[in-house]
Image 1 (cartoon, rainbow, N blue to C red):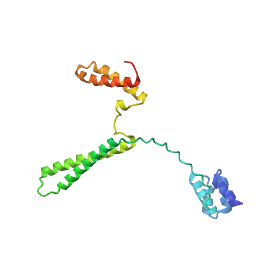
Image 2: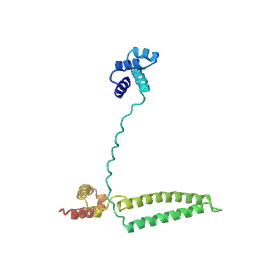
Image 3: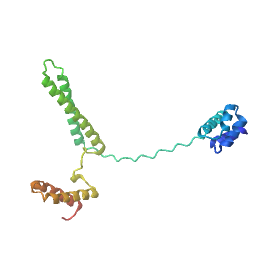
Image 4: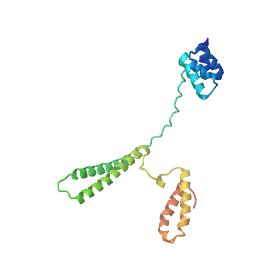
Length: 203
């Protein structure tokens, strides 16, 4: 009976004095009994819990059923343009081939220091280019296009088209006050007209 009382107390020790009384009945250490007789402190409570735990063994709680993870939203696959993907991979192969060729030349006998430095610089440029093309390839496979802003002609979302239209109209007002930038207006007007045609919005 005492053991079950200890297990009940350990499940949620509400009363230090009740725990001390249980230890008085079951515990055998006079030193701990003297410690507990001095009153409750954070240390004495920790010791009391540990000693009662040692007397009855571990208290097992029934395992909780694992919470199933929330289902991940399924991304809609965008088919990659075969011609676009082939173009990226052609550029990637060319950059890798040139880099490999330069690597092989670095150890050529009689190569001047200036030429070697020039080759090393070009190899670094090609390495950056390869990394960028690999990122472009991954983006094409995932999104069906190369990274960067979507061309206005390819935008179908009306909200995005209106946002672009507002920005372009505001920019046009500013450019009209800047004679030195008048050359930018024709392209800007063409972009505005394209968006308005897509939205069927009058000028």
